[in-house]
Image 1 (tube, rainbow, N blue to C red):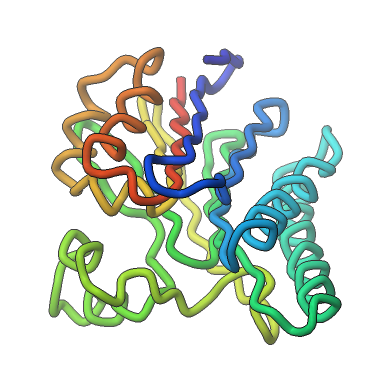
Image 2 (image 1 turned 120 degrees about the vertical axis):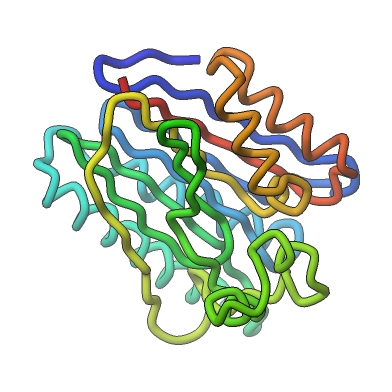
Length: 240
């Protein structure tokens, strides 16, 4: 666990109980107030290459940028990773290589989320949980149309069919949401290796009741107890 003047955070990733390799990548840059989770796709060597490249490129963002410059630098780094992954995929004969990405910036009383894919950011405020992102997946349209809940979508047979990712063909479109932070806000960034096993109610209870010091372990354990069928990553950021 690490402390900063305006935020505290914990960040953990685990291979899970089934996969042989961890294709998730996590990045914590508290000096930039940037946190990121990326979930690779395309199999071992390809998936972890893609997720790690995204994290590594974001890690090169210089310190000392103002909030607007930081947002543009983050976006540029992810787009740079998109182009590099596409080039790598072509050099490997056109194989599919890609990764989800979800990134959080907390700065001067505001937050920014950028994402592509089905990794998520939740916010716990005053004991209530809210999903800030919206999955780019085959089943997301059903949720947005009011035909099912996100909890139901997570159990749908097509839940893993994502419709947008870094490195996948075409131009990358990153969705964005921003707003003001309040003291006591708790943000959760996670891969779908957690949300397959944790309902909104479970996450709300755990985020509300668990101290930050043990929260990372608790979230990973939820996924492992549920079956651990995928890599699982979780970053929790508290606004002081």
